[in-house]
Image 1 (cartoon, one colour):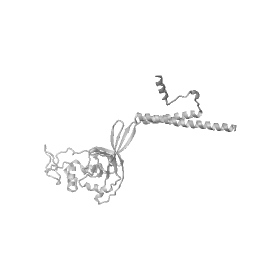
Image 2: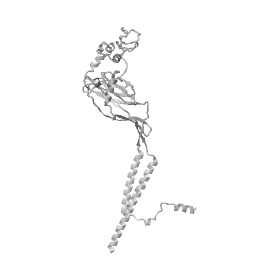
Image 3: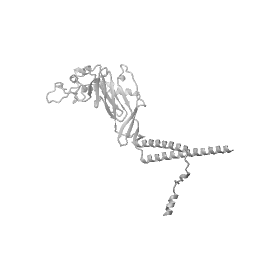
Image 4: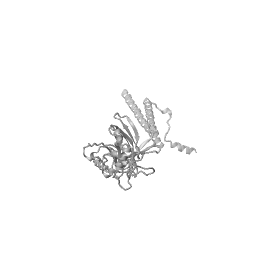
Length: 346
């Protein structure tokens, strides 16, 4: 047993020196204090990194398909009435959403920017009393309402129950609706009165759009959209440059909660409105495109073993460097002192 213990004792990599042989110096004390302060500061810094999450960034190819992109907007037109302002969206897949009203709020504002009225856009006509039927008579009790399109019917069973339905039917025919007051639906809904009432006002429109995750555009323009509106939108596509992009971004925090977002850069172009040219319809157009690269940010904590390794590296590194520095100073002082003593006796 004693021989085994003796063998274990011989493996000691830290042999002890008798304290009687220790030689303590002022320089060694200063270096010890300084190295202790440095080790403490580095330890605190490492501890802060361990307690706080770090974010890892990675670029991957975006392979997502069939997803939608939510576009939030809040835009103000100081001199454009809410009654004639509309928003449309379309993309390169051919999907179009004209005169979007879902999830959109309009605020009527005066010349000073004060809010006059806030209203949520919706679909559907107001309740009406004995409107004009397609056959020319008034709506009778228990009779199904089918309003006249005033010659613009697309089929035998085509009904225009609102002013907007009539306007859309006329636009599909390529006709101009010169006098809305002659249209029963527009007269009952007070279309012209609403436009005249809001004359000189501005409009703040905010809300969001759900669009396909492909290149496309959405725009704000006066008046309602019609089928031929594709022409003027595509005419403006000449302004689109390769510098437009939207980069899909995914952020995952330490709890595993994932946020789907996008990073984007913006390039602005302006086109003057030349009178008499169809291509110069006034409006504000937003073109967007998506990058095939996705950026992922993952929030995570440093492992305890990594923290322990760094702490050991800090302690060992500072201790070693300070030992080398102390040895250099100690032996340097001894050499200088010895030379001075030899010079004194010579």
